[in-house]
Image (cartoon, rainbow, N blue to C red; front, side, top):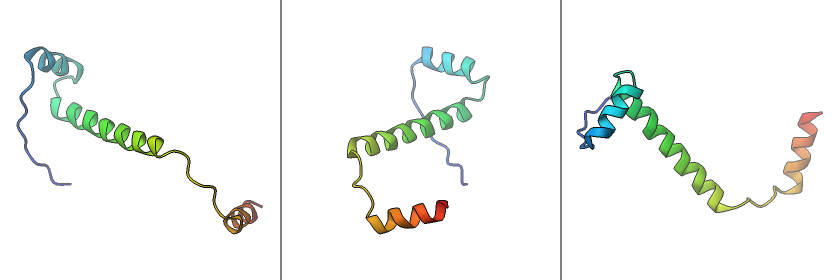
Amino acid sequence: MAVVEVTLSLPGDLVAAVGEASGGDISAYVVKALRSALLMDAMREVADAGHPAPPPDDVLHAAETDLR
């Protein structure tokens, strides 16, 4: 995976807290936080979409047959 350097402007108190929480590896900490945020956003979209329609009977039958 290619790494791209970006510049962020953050409040000083946040930088200090992240520096301490990350053990000094702020980049890895930010990557983890951004991935978590993207996952939460995706899960929220799925939840907002509601329950999907049930699968057709032939799909259910095939799944039940495979489980035996």
